[in-house]
Image (cartoon, rainbow, N blue to C red):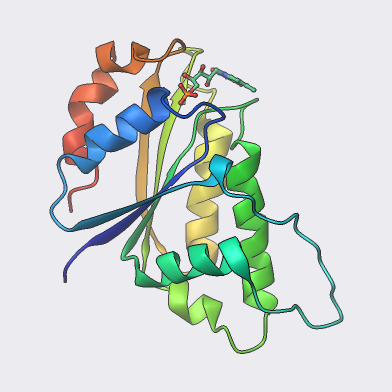
Length: 177
Ligand SMILES: Cc1cc2nc3c(=O)[nH]c(=O)nc-3n(C[C@H](O)[C@H](O)[C@H](O)COP(=O)(O)O)c2cc1C
Protein backbone atom coordinates (compact mmCIF):
# COMPACT_ATOMS: atom_id res chain seq x y z
CA UNK A 1 0.00 0.00 0.00
CA UNK A 2 1.25 3.51 -0.87
CA UNK A 3 2.43 5.35 2.25
CA UNK A 4 0.93 8.73 3.00
CA UNK A 5 2.75 10.18 6.01
CA UNK A 6 1.36 13.13 7.95
CA UNK A 7 3.92 15.02 10.05
CA UNK A 8 2.45 17.07 12.90
CA UNK A 9 5.02 19.63 14.10
CA UNK A 10 4.55 21.35 17.45
CA UNK A 11 7.70 23.24 18.45
CA UNK A 12 7.26 26.87 19.45
CA UNK A 13 10.10 27.77 17.08
CA UNK A 14 9.68 27.09 13.39
CA UNK A 15 13.20 26.02 12.35
CA UNK A 16 14.27 24.00 15.34
CA UNK A 17 15.81 20.61 15.97
CA UNK A 18 12.59 18.61 15.90
CA UNK A 19 11.52 19.80 12.48
CA UNK A 20 15.06 19.20 11.18
CA UNK A 21 15.05 15.64 12.55
CA UNK A 22 11.58 15.00 11.13
CA UNK A 23 12.67 16.21 7.67
CA UNK A 24 15.75 13.99 7.90
CA UNK A 25 13.40 11.06 8.67
CA UNK A 26 11.18 12.03 5.72
CA UNK A 27 14.21 11.97 3.40
CA UNK A 28 14.29 8.18 3.69
CA UNK A 29 10.61 7.71 2.81
CA UNK A 30 8.97 6.59 -0.38
CA UNK A 31 5.41 7.87 -0.62
CA UNK A 32 3.65 11.14 0.03
CA UNK A 33 4.50 13.45 2.92
CA UNK A 34 2.15 16.05 4.33
CA UNK A 35 3.21 18.65 6.91
CA UNK A 36 1.17 20.63 9.43
CA UNK A 37 2.75 22.93 12.00
CA UNK A 38 0.27 22.77 14.86
CA UNK A 39 1.97 25.75 16.53
CA UNK A 40 1.03 27.91 13.52
CA UNK A 41 -2.57 26.68 13.25
CA UNK A 42 -5.17 28.45 15.32
CA UNK A 43 -6.94 25.40 16.72
CA UNK A 44 -9.86 26.22 18.99
CA UNK A 45 -9.62 25.39 22.66
CA UNK A 46 -11.09 22.03 23.50
CA UNK A 47 -14.58 22.13 25.03
CA UNK A 48 -16.26 19.00 26.37
CA UNK A 49 -20.03 19.36 25.98
CA UNK A 50 -20.86 15.87 27.19
CA UNK A 51 -23.54 14.66 27.79
CA UNK A 52 -24.74 17.06 25.07
CA UNK A 53 -23.64 16.04 21.56
CA UNK A 54 -20.22 17.13 20.26
CA UNK A 55 -20.57 19.50 17.28
CA UNK A 56 -18.71 18.46 14.09
CA UNK A 57 -15.21 19.95 13.63
CA UNK A 58 -14.91 23.09 11.52
CA UNK A 59 -12.16 25.18 9.95
CA UNK A 60 -8.55 24.24 10.82
CA UNK A 61 -9.71 21.31 12.92
CA UNK A 62 -11.74 19.85 10.05
CA UNK A 63 -8.75 20.40 7.75
CA UNK A 64 -6.44 18.40 10.04
CA UNK A 65 -9.05 15.67 10.42
CA UNK A 66 -9.20 15.43 6.62
CA UNK A 67 -5.41 15.13 6.41
CA UNK A 68 -5.44 12.45 9.11
CA UNK A 69 -8.11 10.55 7.18
CA UNK A 70 -5.82 10.42 4.13
CA UNK A 71 -2.75 9.34 6.15
CA UNK A 72 -1.44 5.81 6.50
CA UNK A 73 1.02 7.12 9.12
CA UNK A 74 0.79 9.97 11.63
CA UNK A 75 4.07 11.29 13.04
CA UNK A 76 4.07 13.61 16.03
CA UNK A 77 7.29 15.65 15.76
CA UNK A 78 7.45 17.19 19.20
CA UNK A 79 10.24 18.59 21.37
CA UNK A 80 10.14 17.61 25.03
CA UNK A 81 8.54 20.46 26.97
CA UNK A 82 8.48 19.80 30.70
CA UNK A 83 8.70 16.03 30.20
CA UNK A 84 5.61 16.09 28.00
CA UNK A 85 4.19 17.01 24.59
CA UNK A 86 4.08 20.73 23.70
CA UNK A 87 0.65 22.30 24.19
CA UNK A 88 -0.35 22.41 20.47
CA UNK A 89 0.20 18.65 20.13
CA UNK A 90 -1.64 17.92 23.36
CA UNK A 91 -4.50 20.17 22.27
CA UNK A 92 -4.93 18.17 19.07
CA UNK A 93 -4.99 14.94 21.09
CA UNK A 94 -7.73 16.42 23.27
CA UNK A 95 -9.68 17.18 20.10
CA UNK A 96 -9.30 13.51 19.14
CA UNK A 97 -11.58 12.80 22.13
CA UNK A 98 -14.08 15.20 20.63
CA UNK A 99 -13.83 13.45 17.26
CA UNK A 100 -14.59 10.17 19.01
CA UNK A 101 -17.76 11.68 20.45
CA UNK A 102 -18.94 13.56 17.34
CA UNK A 103 -21.93 11.73 15.81
CA UNK A 104 -21.32 10.31 12.36
CA UNK A 105 -17.54 10.85 12.16
CA UNK A 106 -16.61 7.20 12.76
CA UNK A 107 -13.27 8.44 14.05
CA UNK A 108 -12.40 5.21 15.86
CA UNK A 109 -12.88 3.14 12.72
CA UNK A 110 -10.98 5.70 10.65
CA UNK A 111 -7.94 5.63 12.96
CA UNK A 112 -7.81 1.87 13.45
CA UNK A 113 -4.80 0.34 11.73
CA UNK A 114 -3.00 3.63 10.97
CA UNK A 115 0.59 3.80 12.24
CA UNK A 116 1.49 6.30 14.96
CA UNK A 117 5.09 7.51 15.46
CA UNK A 118 6.93 9.98 17.68
CA UNK A 119 9.99 12.03 16.76
CA UNK A 120 11.22 14.02 19.70
CA UNK A 121 14.20 16.17 20.71
CA UNK A 122 15.25 17.15 24.19
CA UNK A 123 18.15 19.01 25.80
CA UNK A 124 18.70 16.75 28.82
CA UNK A 125 20.75 13.63 27.92
CA UNK A 126 19.08 11.57 30.67
CA UNK A 127 17.25 8.85 28.67
CA UNK A 128 14.48 8.76 31.28
CA UNK A 129 13.35 12.30 30.33
CA UNK A 130 11.14 11.37 27.31
CA UNK A 131 9.86 8.06 28.70
CA UNK A 132 6.50 9.35 29.99
CA UNK A 133 5.85 11.16 26.71
CA UNK A 134 6.66 8.08 24.64
CA UNK A 135 4.52 5.84 26.86
CA UNK A 136 1.59 8.25 26.52
CA UNK A 137 1.83 8.09 22.73
CA UNK A 138 2.22 4.31 22.68
CA UNK A 139 -0.82 3.89 24.94
CA UNK A 140 -2.78 6.31 22.77
CA UNK A 141 -2.00 4.15 19.75
CA UNK A 142 -3.03 0.99 21.58
CA UNK A 143 -6.25 2.52 22.87
CA UNK A 144 -7.25 3.62 19.37
CA UNK A 145 -6.29 0.31 17.76
CA UNK A 146 -3.47 2.01 15.87
CA UNK A 147 -0.11 0.39 15.19
CA UNK A 148 2.68 1.86 17.32
CA UNK A 149 5.64 2.56 15.02
CA UNK A 150 8.02 3.69 17.77
CA UNK A 151 9.92 6.77 18.85
CA UNK A 152 13.07 8.45 17.55
CA UNK A 153 14.83 10.37 20.30
CA UNK A 154 17.14 13.24 19.41
CA UNK A 155 19.35 15.38 21.60
CA UNK A 156 19.87 19.08 21.09
CA UNK A 157 19.13 22.51 22.45
CA UNK A 158 20.35 25.26 20.11
CA UNK A 159 18.86 24.99 16.59
CA UNK A 160 20.96 22.59 14.51
CA UNK A 161 22.42 20.72 17.50
CA UNK A 162 20.53 17.58 16.56
CA UNK A 163 22.53 17.24 13.31
CA UNK A 164 25.49 16.18 15.45
CA UNK A 165 23.48 13.61 17.43
CA UNK A 166 23.39 9.87 16.67
CA UNK A 167 19.65 10.12 15.97
CA UNK A 168 20.46 12.16 12.84
CA UNK A 169 22.06 9.14 11.17
CA UNK A 170 19.29 6.79 12.27
CA UNK A 171 16.51 9.11 11.07
CA UNK A 172 16.38 8.17 7.34
CA UNK A 173 15.65 4.54 8.30
CA UNK A 174 13.34 5.30 11.21
CA UNK A 175 10.02 5.43 9.34
CA UNK A 176 10.75 2.61 6.93
CA UNK A 177 8.75 -0.58 7.41
C1 LIG B 1 9.10 25.33 27.22
C2 LIG B 1 10.30 24.42 27.14
C3 LIG B 1 10.35 23.32 27.98
C4 LIG B 1 11.42 22.43 27.89
N1 LIG B 1 11.44 21.33 28.69
C5 LIG B 1 12.43 20.43 28.56
C6 LIG B 1 12.45 19.24 29.37
O1 LIG B 1 11.58 18.99 30.19
N2 LIG B 1 13.48 18.36 29.20
C7 LIG B 1 14.48 18.59 28.28
O2 LIG B 1 15.38 17.75 28.16
N3 LIG B 1 14.47 19.70 27.50
C8 LIG B 1 13.48 20.61 27.61
N4 LIG B 1 13.46 21.74 26.82
C9 LIG B 1 14.51 21.90 25.78
C10 LIG B 1 14.01 21.52 24.39
O3 LIG B 1 13.49 20.22 24.37
C11 LIG B 1 15.16 21.64 23.40
O4 LIG B 1 15.61 22.99 23.36
C12 LIG B 1 14.78 21.20 22.00
O5 LIG B 1 15.92 21.23 21.17
C13 LIG B 1 13.72 22.13 21.40
O6 LIG B 1 13.30 21.60 20.17
P1 LIG B 1 13.16 22.54 18.87
O7 LIG B 1 14.57 22.94 18.50
O8 LIG B 1 12.53 21.65 17.86
O9 LIG B 1 12.33 23.70 19.26
C14 LIG B 1 12.44 22.65 26.92
C15 LIG B 1 12.37 23.79 26.10
C16 LIG B 1 11.32 24.66 26.20
C17 LIG B 1 11.29 25.88 25.29
